[in-house]
Length: 214
Image 1 (cartoon, rainbow, N blue to C red):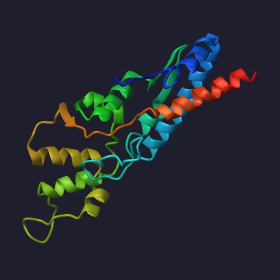
Image 2: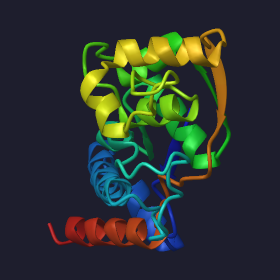
Image 3: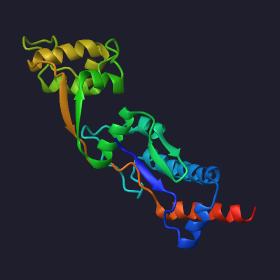
Image 4: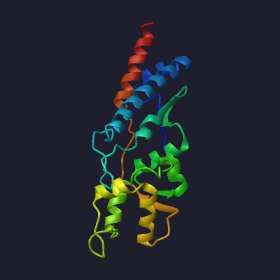
């Protein structure tokens, strides 16, 4: 599980820390709520831009697909303020665990049931995917042709003539391997969250100044 805690004192000097401690709990919580809101906004923007908080582009998918990564993780990132800290985390344990694995680049264990929970149940009647078409060709899949051996179909033909269910069945038959019910994937490091101490410090100073002027 990935959780990042920001203490309210941050980089404040002693005088500013005393000022902060003298505030009412509700006021401190308000300051931390603003800090959480700004940190969430900054990190969500990085996730949606597909790079880490320092601006470095994330490592792409091993498959080479250009589809945007971790869109749901960005949407579920949130802040929970208290009187002396704000916790940056995700709205459920599944998202929090996935974020932890990407943040640190560790091995991720999948089961067929978990894959369905994350990605949804496949539409077996939908056209075969490009990945399935490539796999079929790699396995030597052939269709009727002029010769007895038949001919190798194109990616376009497979996608337009086979649905996902049928393509998956043919792949399993050609590969002659049992369907995997669980597997491990080693993830590269894709940093999702970082706290900019200067940003936090600036927000606290602004709020302390605003409170003194009241």
